Image (cartoon, rainbow, N blue to C red; front, side, top):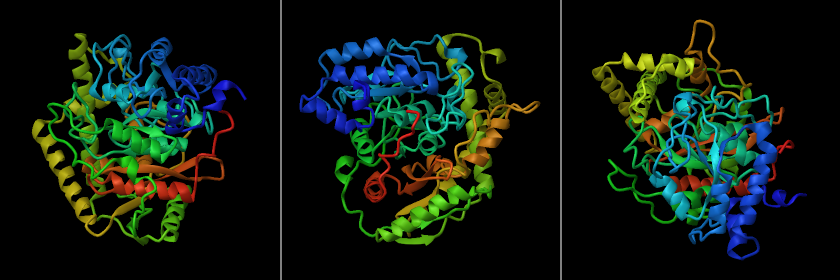
Length: 476
């Protein structure tokens, strides 16, 4: 075993503990991560902007005495800016854009002692549930390199799965943390709306859909990371209810007897693959075996109306990305500078009137209130994370005469995760099941607004009952 492999599958807290007890130095962890990235990235294409010298300088300097002091970390190349390092958002239009400031989230990550060793791959503007940008090429799934990593935090999830870093940044506007967590077999939590800051560049993003956090190997890493980054920032338009205590204290705490509702049917009526149904039913049985009250139920919502309004909001958000980045760079956008789907979706978004947009927001807010009422009678809602196992690369490519095919394919692949972005509720994909082909199938748990604590208690209980850390893809 090489020196770099000694640390490869330790979680972030274990690595930080080695530093704290002076058994290793931060530079040793960082050099090990860099060695793994250099060895594995040609296969998986997870890291698209190496920051190795910056990382080595930081690791050899005076790092903050934070909970993750010396631990290597990747920053997704979307939303969160790092001063002096390119932020492309997966788009050729921004291939030379370099921000002059750190976002508040990045400042908090640094204060936690994390050492950012690079930026991870993402689809253009995070639009698709796969990570195959034309600018950088596809990220590949460590369980099967012919398969998608999911998206849009696919580079981060692939890197954690392959052992390049123990955890990595992600953001989630329609499932972009939970989708790749499911495809790659890692833990992915989308926090409550506004739990983490988006400033100074954004007050909110996509009318409150987007949330910042990360993908992790262990549940405790996710909790400790959220402790390190959460809380309002100056000028935020709104913020999440303060937690009762540190999220890390919820790990191993008794969740009590939870009322768990589960469903295997999509609100839009799209078919659900048998592997994904089986994963949910096994998770429901596991919850029952752990003493929870489990029943089959789902909120009564108009799934097709939800999907139509969500796509309208998504298209307007795409138009805003194109036009906002044109203002940022002072350049005129033209179709050749963007992927075919991005330009077509932006054109669709530009055609939406202000009144129609507000009507769609009103519909989504009404559906959110319906779902909130469902949680009067249930503590957790269990669904498939995705409607299918990880798809082959190229599944979302435009088709002749149909540049929006990828979005149409996405609506069939991702019928569950966007609900929690609209409601603002915390939700997580937990890697409890692998199918006969050896591909991970995540199970999706949604909690009440502001109640990550219950999800962390349940997740740590599930992790103890059915551990996943020992599952490692052979190729990594």
